[in-house]
Image (cartoon, rainbow, N blue to C red; front, side):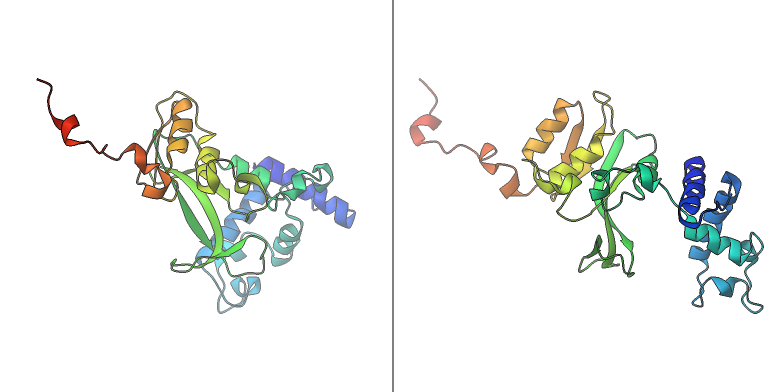
Length: 243
């Protein structure tokens, strides 16, 4: 991942500026580390505040110069724009897709499927969502499959109703989400998926069982074909035991 990020960053800077920023994997690792540190220790004045006399923060200021940091950040690229097809560009996250697809870990036996919000109030309105009642109502909605350890094993960023798993099948959006996140689980390996009543429906359970994946979740009566579970009404004659 780091090697690909390094190569694409160098290529993008050459394409746009005529010269490469000539970075390397070690420097890219430093850049990412600085960004993570800045996320933990936030300063309202921007990047320069980490180097000001009164607010200097060595884990950032001592790693690389501000000019070098800005130069790398401007050229940072996850894909080679010249090799991406027009079809691939219909994905609103095509510039991040290779990186996102690589952020998967070895699955665990017990898995939970749900949604989460990544807080964000910036200007990326194409996929930004508002969910009233959430601790962070503004941000990016992400469908996730997490293991019993709490580690996210697979995820998919919700992009609206245009493309990908939002193109509903007979399972509906919620069922498609589960099938998409279960697609990276090997068949017949006794995996279990747990979810709430937003996702649960009988056709979904059947499809997962066809792949050897077990499902457990709460259910809404209107979505499970409740007639299958209703007790059959009998007459008095039917209730009588034969003589």
